[in-house]
Length: 228
Ligand code: OAD
Image (cartoon, rainbow, N blue to C red; front, side, top):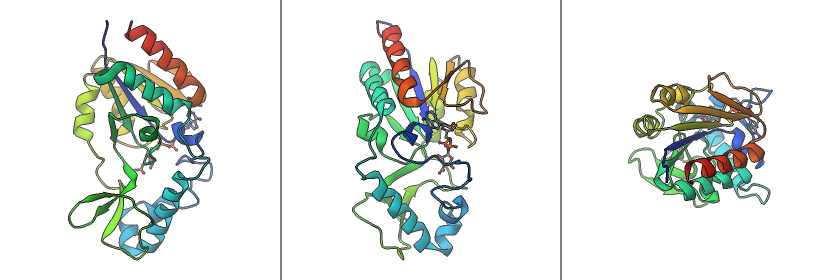
């Protein structure tokens, strides 16, 4: 059996077909908000009500009937089951669709919408209903602009072991994820992008198309080719 390490990076595009909007829509707004008003530490300091109201709404949206993992999320769960420790998923998404699809080997580098964090102690709790909008003690467990991403060192280490790196549904505009393909490439990996349009990042291969169609196809090829 040939065993190689596949590292997959996902962005908002993989969840677009699950009914969640991407960040860089044509209007430049995120769910109707300017990111500086809802996704910066300064916004939370000056206006916690707007910030909590925004994230409370996003969390409730995750539980809507029409929001569920799509075929792309499910295919990645299948890939993890097939490759075991030869697989690692890095996501920029704060939704929980990868977890709901069954992936466990995940680095959620921008945090998780379904968790809240104590501002003083750093304690992280699962979300158990709306956060009171005036609360300054508990904040969303998400990475805001200007804050450090979560687990970056271990991600860079994993990337250096990758034989295949696949980026799915990410515009490659946000550092440090925009560098991952180059890091994996330097380490000797073959790099592949799946996106409905080419992103700004360089890859060895581009697969243009919707994640829900292209990811299951690629996963089939990887499983057939790598675990034979
Ligand atoms: P973006 O909104 O920047 O990019 C989404 C990408 O998905 C675009 O390249 C689209 O072409 C592609 N796309 C859309 N629908 C697709 C589909 N059905 N199948 C395949 N691709 C599709 O989202 P991200 O790259 O994830 O950070 O954004 C990165 C980070 O920027 C986010 O995590 C967030 C934001 O600022 C933080 O909140 C810290």
